[in-house]
Length: 86
Image (tube, helix red, strand yellow):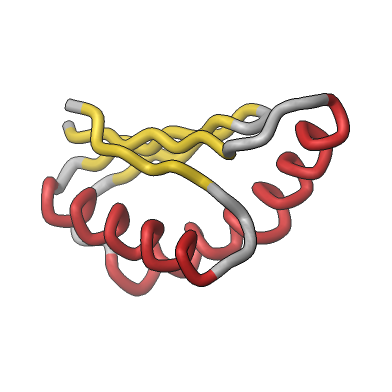
C-alpha cells in the first residue's frame, strides 16, 4: 500500500469552511472520475476539513494521481501541497 497526503495551505475558520466546499464539490468528483478512468488497483480517498489522504494498492496509480494532482494544483488558484507518504 502506498499513500499520498495533501494539505490546503491557508488557515482560519472561514478558509476551513471554504476548503470543505472545495473538497466536496471539486475534489470528490475529480477523484471519482480519476478512479473510474485510470485506477488499476484499489484505492481509498479520505478528507477532513483541509487535509486529505489517499491509499493505493498499485504504486503506479499513486505516482500517476500525485502527478495529476500537482498539475491541477499548479493550474488552479488554490494552493494545495501534495506529497508521497510511504
